Image (cartoon, rainbow, N blue to C red; front, top):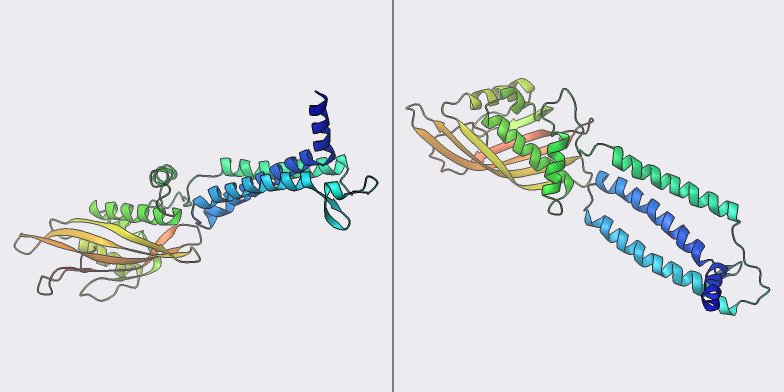
Length: 287
């Protein structure tokens, strides 16, 4: 019993308990800070796990140092090398308590912020019918967790919703995915560089008889600043010719997306062309 009491007294004398408590609270604060900024930077999710492992290893190292060394005015010295009358500076209990409580309050505030903030990675506007809903975005991120970066998953979801809007022949929703200054480059046709001409391109496409259209992204690449990206993929299309005979088309497309001031992604440039031979009937259909 006396040995245990002596051991704990030695831990207290060497400030091991204080170091452990200080490290734990500061590590908590650092984890909360990382939890806020990692999603904002679209950084890989494994960074948080790696950071946690580093902090755990650092805790072991901090305990070892606090047991084996003492901080003196001349720097770190091994505990057994100190003379009994050597003065070791340390914080008072009041100052130590203030530091621990202050750090814990900040960490708790960041934790509460993460729990209470909206889970969607895309800001939702009441007048924006095409933004991904909070629930659908959260479900998608859970389904694809660990496979792609959050920004890439958002763009894949947006492109999928865009394809569904076109398949439903909803003209207004289809053109709403473009930014106000978007440029559309349909095959074998002049470019559309205004909202009205872009709308006319899609109006003609969706009015095609027997139209069945869909596309799927195959690759998403985010820019380094996180505000621009490009999406490429393939499309399939069926429409009737003048005689009513179905024409099957397939091809590829490339989109350039920009994050707007409100946080929503919009397509700023769009182009596509067919994989069919040049002799095939030319169409201006999308994807």
